[in-house]
Image (cartoon, rainbow, N blue to C red; front, side, top):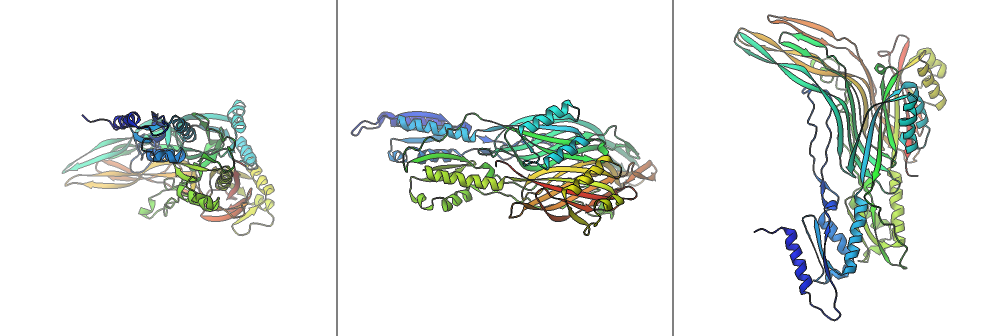
Length: 636
């Protein structure tokens, strides 16, 4: 009969307890089983689905995928932590033992040390056992209210990282007064560091293609049914910071509506339906205060008087409070402390817009609209590793003290476990606070595509634009936005407002996506032929991909900008092809785009105006891109 490892370990400990010989004064030992499964259990990631309408397969991907498992602490690290920090010399005695198995920790020790082990495990649970409630809201916001709100946020210290009072104002007072409508809402719980999702999706079936078969003098086709999703997806990995550092949120947000009924195209092979969707997508990493929220906005001229805003809120839920450090027990006495450093060691990756192209990606295969809008780029992680952090502390904080074997420093599961004197702990705490202060600097970028009367531009800037772009002062920016609000000499074509980390490439896209018949393949047999339609998608709307880099002075930021604005002419022009079986149709869409790829350095609170062309503007007007930036520093 095979015995479970924990049973063998327990038997060994009990035998050790019963047979340990007495030498001199009898030492009382006890055996105890500690449940450590909560600390060592692997937490699976659960990424959410994508609602994107794609050329090759327009059906939704599976709702749930399983990624690599993650655990808070390994059992071996936990056992080492105990032996290093609880009466280290006592473990040299063969009668004091520690064993692992089945999510349990089996210990034989003195009652005093068993209590210390229990206290240590309770403290570790309090430090690494946080979980987070994340709420997501999709709001319809009146354009004039949104402009006023963005104006306020761009002039406050925390920018689009809203505190609890501001969240209540947006979700409470503004809703009551009719400026804001809640279009969708969802919430989800996650352990700190675990990726989870919540999705509320309605699938719309449609005939997306025809499967064509041709043999000798006969041809046939079978309809291929696809599905396109409408709804809201909140995909998030929350990471709890220490103290007032808040909650880091690695986010993917999608909200999509289906524009029905779908137009149909009658082909010689049968009927094909042409789905159309309207979406807002955000991918970024940000930080919010506990109980606070972050705000993203996307608007396009098709939206009329109501813009779409996504608001994400996070609340920390704690199983228990970590023990506060007690008074110094004496000069030079050592104290065990556990420091949460997850925000410092979290790998902030790029979230580029490869899948959010504007225009007609793939049309260049036929020599049409030029290359796809966005280029792929490998993600670049931005973090200090746990090993680097340990080395940094050993080198910069009381360097000589670490030669003493009773002082220890180790990293596991996003935490530093330190045994040191009070004065050294104070220096470590100060260093970690300074590192958090430097890392948690967010960049809020608001980009507005405008069409502006040429005379209005001359009135606002008599000196003219220095080349194609110029920095403008707050008064000129506000005057330009005021013209757009009035709508007589200027208008807003598209808007995005976005928050991300320093040196992180992220994006926000508000798009209309359309399927269309891009080409026809001809299937030929001996005495029969039939057309096989090739389906693609195109999109118009507004897109901002951005990568900010802070200057060394902390007051300026360089923005690597990749924005775009596009408008597709509706309805699509059609070309008819006659066949023996009937008539086939090919769509010939026309998409006008404004594209920019540049870098510009701005001061905190600054703005820059880029002049565009006239392809997307009415007669006598030019497009202009107004970009403003705000640095957000939390926890100061």
